[in-house]
Image (cartoon, rainbow, N blue to C red; front, top):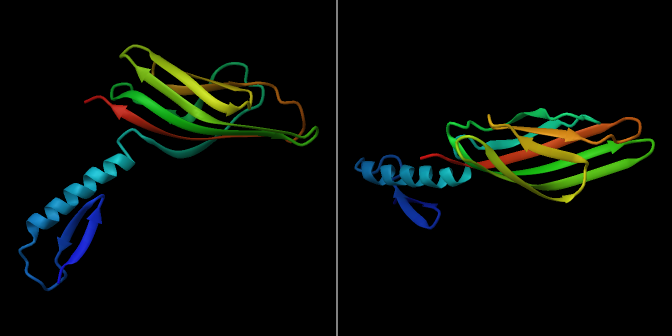
Length: 157
């Protein structure tokens, strides 16, 4: 009796060990379907969930480590982010979450940032595909700032 494995909406009959060895086509179909399904989860050049520190009072744009895109391959981005910036005395707790959407025309990027909240952080992207930020001055002691992000991309075909 074969084992039934489902990928998306398609079922595959995979023989159990010791059964008929004539299962190459069925396994090939199964692995092709798994591969196609996984492409919807992660594409080459996607940025997996990553975090970085946000400096206080960063008056010039500075690069976010790990938040960049290969312009020879990536033509469009959809990046989600979450920012927290806190101080102790006086107590401040700023949060912001949002999306950075962008397109690359082969020369320059166009981006739009949509968010909820205001953590006092602005974003831009360089022509080389590097996301950068600058931040306001959050007055208080024991400053902490973090950015959590991930991105899905569309690569050039």
